[in-house]
Amino acid sequence: MKLIAGPAVFICDECVELCKDIIREEVQDQAERVSEKLPKPQEIKAVLDQYVIGQDYAKKVLAVAVYNHYKRLEHGSRR
Image (cartoon, rainbow, N blue to C red):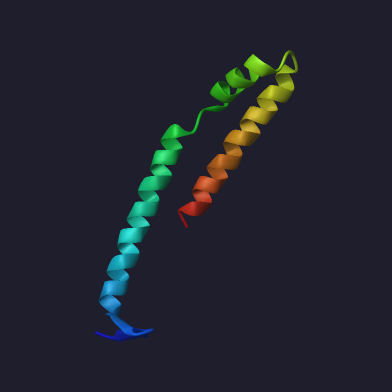
């Protein structure tokens, strides 16, 4: 066992590893909850349909781009 020194405090390396595991699990749980809430491209387009007249191709492209953007952010947070 090794002690790690901080300003006026010490912590063992095993406790550091335990804390890292706890934080990793919490971050993963949060990412999964975000994934469940993320609307599908069809749902995003449906909202755009309420505000934008015509331009169906642009709305589809935008909906997919927004969805992919948030999926990339979610994937990056799991690293």
